[in-house]
Image (tube, rainbow, N blue to C red; front, side):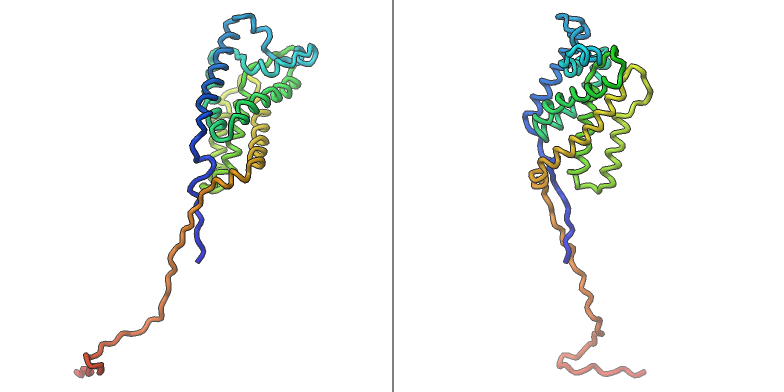
Length: 241
């Protein structure tokens, strides 16, 4: 009798860590506050935040690779990034820890900017955290594809593709948007998801709760005719017509 294995729970079905609530709130407030100061021109911080090839590579102001993450073109740009960043931050921190996000996320954000500004004219400024948002989304979807084996691989791929199209593929082209940041962030996110899984593979797989379902075997007995007998065991008389 071969049992059917059903995965009832896994790493992603567990309750998120309490740290995720605080971490997501603090990071969201920080991003919103610095964005507000940048847009309002307060404290004279605006000239020191955007990243460009000229300011980073020629002047050596490498901190701009990270300060640029917190600068946004306008309120709509800031709110658009926050709308995706906050739920993704909660899920990544809640399930994979503070070191995946925001620590690793911010570090990778600087790497994304470093790669992207090399493809831009030296005087063009790069601002915004959308590259990190794409990294977060790709990291989560990659981990979902690997971990959540309650669904078939085909269904997981279809769902991941659907979410990518709905959430991360723009409907219209806007020349002021750095689509290279989105692309680089998404590719690095897939790599990060694979690394996170293989580094924590043992504990992730140990979190699976499996149920073994045994289907009852159907035993086919050989059919034999049943005949009636009299109380004393004698065969009943035949009827003649």
